[in-house]
Structures are given as C-alpha cells and as structure tokens.
Amino acid sequence: MADSSDSEQFSDGESDGDFEVISGSSESEDEMNDVPMNANPWFRVRPPEIDYLHDQRFVENSGPQNVPAADAKPIDYFLLFLTLDFLRHIVRETNRYAQDFITSQQRIRRFSRLHSWFKVGAVTLDEMKGFISVILNMGLIRKHSITEYWNTKFQSQDTVWFRNMFSRNRFQSILKFFHIVDNTTIPNRNDDNYSPTSKFQCFVDLFNRQSKQHYIPKQNLSIDESLIASKGRSSIIQYIPSKAAKFGVKLWVLAEAVSGYICQISVYKGKQYDPTPQGMLQGAYVVNKLLDAAGLFNKAYHLFTDSFFSSINLAKELLAKGTLFTGTLRANRQMPNTIKNPVLQEKESIYIRQGRILLCAYKERNGRKPVRIISSFSKAAQENDKPAMICSYNKFMGGVDLADMMTESYNDGRKTLKVWKKVVFNLMHRMVINSYIIYKENTSDNPKLSRLSFTQRLIEDLAKDHMVLRNENQDDNRQNKNKHGIRKLPGHREKDCDVCSDRNGYGGRRRSRTVCRVCGKGVHRDCKDNHLCVES
Image (cartoon, rainbow, N blue to C red; front, side, top):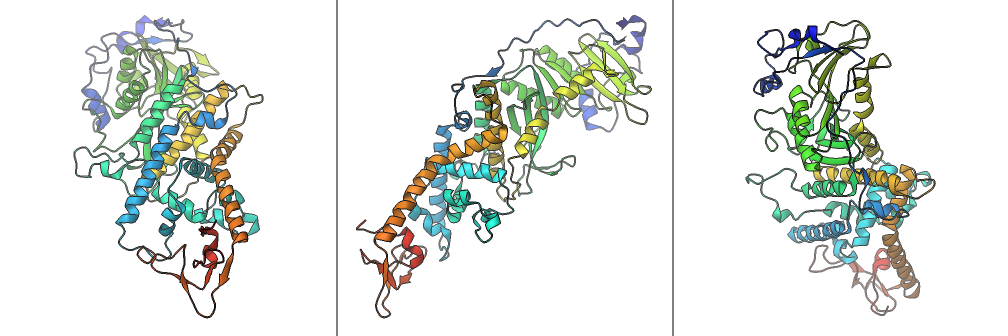
C-alpha cells in the first residue's frame, strides 16, 4: 500500500536531499545530462502491495519456428543455423585462400605438408562437414595438443576415430587454410571502413539471423557480457578482471532466461570502433541495440540485467518502448537518497514507487552491503523473508551464464594466434546449444536425447559422408597396393618418384630406387599408398 505521508520526502522537486550525483564518476556525469526522471513524487509503499495492473500482456507465440519434422535428426537442427549455403561458402573461401597462399610462397620446404594440398585435392563439402565434426569432438575428447589425437605410441591414449576421419597432415592443412571471407575484400587497417571484426562478422550475422528466424523466446530475457578467452594479438581483446579467463573477446549477449537460448550477439570492438553515443551510458546503449536488432520492442518482454546496465532512466525508456525491466542498481547511479543510503536492519527492506517504477533496498544480514534493485514489473511483496523482486531477479538473470556454462563443455581451451578462428568455433558451439534447445521443444523422441547424446549423434551425422568416402578410397588404395605393388630397380638405378618428386615445383626432385610393378614409374615405399597407377 502507498503511504502518502512520505511523498514529500521523495519528491523530485527543489529539495536538495532527494537526489545525489557522485562526483568523479564518468557514469554519473553522463546521467547528469539526461532528461530529469519525472515530476511525479516518489511514494513509500509497504508490502503487500495491491496487484499493479499493466496495460500490456505478453501474447507472443513462443517456441520453435520454421523447424524440421518432429522426428528429424540432430544434424537437421544444426543445419538450421550453419546452413548448407554457408558451408559451401566456407569451402570456396578455404580453397581460395589455400591456392592464394601456396602460389604466393617463393620457396616451400622440402617436407612441408603444403606439397600434398593439391595432390590430395581441394576441400569438398563432405570433407568440410567432417572437419567441423572433428572440431566439435575435440571439445568432448580433450587432449593437450592436436597431434595427440593421431598419436599411436600408447594404446591407452589411442583415438582411432580421428585417424579414420583425416590424416593428421590433412586436418592441420584444412585448419590452417580455414577461411570464411575473401581477404582481398577486407579494408586495410588505415581505411575509414576498416573493422576489426571483418574476418568473422558474416558468421556473427549468420548466427543472429538464423537464431531470430527459428525461435521466438519466452517472456523473460536476460542481457549480460560473455568472454571468449584468448590472448591473441587483436585490437578487440579486452581485459575483464572479474572473469576467470580475464583476457578475450567480449560479447554482449541477449538470451532467453530459462533455457539459455541465445537470441542476439554483438561483438564489442573497443571504444575506437564501437563508441557509445554521447549522453548515453554504455549499458543502456547495448540494451537498446540488442533488443532493437532482435525485434523485441513493444511486445511486453521482461528484461533482467545486472548493475552495469541498470538505471532509472533505462527502465523508463524501455517502458515507453513496451518492454518491462528488472535489474540491480549501483550506488553511484541516480536515485532517491532513501534507496541510495538506506538505514536497514538484518532482513529488512524498503520500497518506494514512482508510477510504474518500483525501487527497493534490502539488507540480507548485518555486515553486508544493502542490495538495490529496480523494476517496472514487480510489486512490493515479500517471498521467503526477502523481496519478491529479488527472488524473481535470481531466477531469471542467469540466462547468459547458463548459455556460457553449456558452451564451455565444448571448448577445448586450445591456444591459437588467430583470434577470429577462436570466435567462429565458439559460435559453432553456441549453434549446437541453440539446436539442442529447439530439438527439446520440437522432437517426438521418447525419451529425448540428453545434450551430450545429441552432440554425439550430430558429430556422427556430420562425419558419416566423409568417412564413407575416405574408407572407399582407402579400400581402393589397398587393392591397388596388393594388385600392383613395387619392385626394386637393379643395381643403383633411380627414377623420379611419381608422388613426391616435382622438378619444377615446390619440393624439388626426389629419386627412388623402387618402381611400380605395372606402370614402371618410380615410387618410394612410403609413397606407394598415394600412387595412382595409370593401368588402374
């Protein structure tokens, strides 16, 4: 209920004690330039408050949209996000970069794996699917280096599946040349149109577009920052001491609060390339940017954020755009003194209201600082000896943290100098998470697959076509080997090896004392499995 006797104490008028701006804080200085909060007074309210009627009701048809049949396989859900068209685009750009890189080298070392790139052949669509399946499986089966996946020295550490998918050199070649954009189209660093995210921005756009197309989130949303750990050299690397990794690429993430489904992602490029508009707090700018890009304004969504994003002005701005808001408040933000400097005992709380905006200060126990929270949705009420709005915040604020926790289970944590590859592979992992969330709500499986089983089925489906083709090629090589074989030349005669020798190429001339029994061409014993006999 409202206590009218306290209204003068919280009025916004000329009283010097109503509001206080902490000097020396850039955030508070920005808010000083904002529009005054309201001419309406702040009223003290006491629980239980009567139900606060809202003009808007949430009527969105939440859940999966434009999805495959209920009996579809995991790969069908994953390809909703990483589409076949984009996979073909990756294949083209990878092959383009490989050719450009090799032809640009004046000299390649004799035993470099680059010699085998064109002899094995350019990357195909099935091979790229197999490559992605290996990347995903490396997150489930973690080893300290890539070469360990092909190590056969110790039987206890043997992982046959990886050897059946690729040879070690072929996988590392694809990893080296993996590209999603044409480098010649990227502006130079001193160009006005340069962006530090240009090498992977198209993948971020794909993620946002497909996430928005195939799922309508439920009412409760959360926004928070996320960090892709990396110490690579890039202007977008940020230092966040509160994170476990501390260094990495910072993402602003909008997620569904309960499931962790990621609706929208924005990569923070730093102050130089991603400045905050003058007169706005960075948190408020990010919130408006994400909600607008996801098309969620004026639909009665309820947003939860932490104190970095929250302010009274943001709550009122979102309310004007048909969006409800709940978040914690920092002590240096603009607010009435009763909330800024509350005098509270253990388990005590205080509420004040201005129209739809409710502020609360609560002290859990003596010796701890009070918690300040704002909401344009909640009413003054207690739940389990604490404000109900705090219970609601604790329940729905963790959407982004939940998504990060699930994504971390796929991250192999391996270092790389190419920061953009780290971002792309991380977004692939997040695509798996979003795919599984849609699968759970859409599938007719009984019982439903666990997230681990879903991922394992997905890896097998992605790898299947490439593994079948590779096994067929290996069988053909074995047959040719058994049918033709090699023989040793008499005396000390030698011939150029048909597989690894190239007089005018990168590896130079390489001679062999053994030749193919059928065609008579020189072939080393180590090269015989890759020799394509003319007769065969």
